[in-house]
Length: 322
Image (cartoon, rainbow, N blue to C red):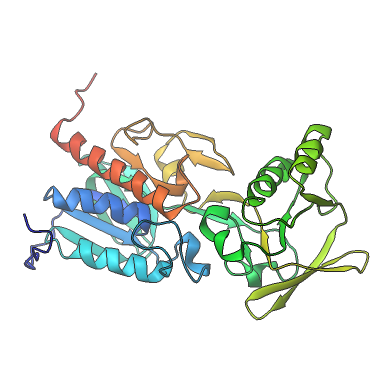
């Protein structure tokens, strides 16, 4: 078939029970939805319009979309999904979910409820930012969390990696070691925390990463960019950008309400899934940052693709009751 073939818009009656509800309409959710609607299944997408990377001006490393704004990427993807006649979309927050006779019942913030045979949870995570003056205002511009997403744009300049707590030191060390491939001038700011082992200090020294132990007082902005870091002792050091490996928490409690088992992820608690992206609750599939796959738009999209296709296959080949 010609790749430019247009989908003729068709208006179908809204079903009383959807074959799948996708909660979360960003990279993972839309990727899951497109697999299901292309299989001609009735799908409802619920989204609050608050993707994790909404603070960034551009997204990088996504094949065919490098440098596009997160909003432009999501808007274009949603338009393509909604061209399929079995797709429905609601700008709404899912506040509660439970198992029902049909499969699942999802309650929305306005009190209404929708039902489906399968659920795909793509609700993502939120970054828990430390209470450092100036950091929140620069998040997504002068302060970033992913070298692969934003490292190239700051390449060759003076970069900082911020440690937040003793438990965050290993992740901060990891980021600082990575960033040396983008810049010859990288400093790990321990921010008064302890926990840097002798082995890690040797690794940092071997990669020519500087170490600053003093607590950080505040970040000094220059518009949307980072200009300098001021330390508690009054010193100021100029930096072009800062990287912060954040701790995260789930953006929604829906998985917990359904009884899905959790596990420890790279930066916080995530929903446990099998290789088919199914959670420990039958019929509930999970994709994106709220599972072990996290931190990148293209990772989330790939994860959503798998979750959507596996959710579809479960409708064709349902598990036999034991």
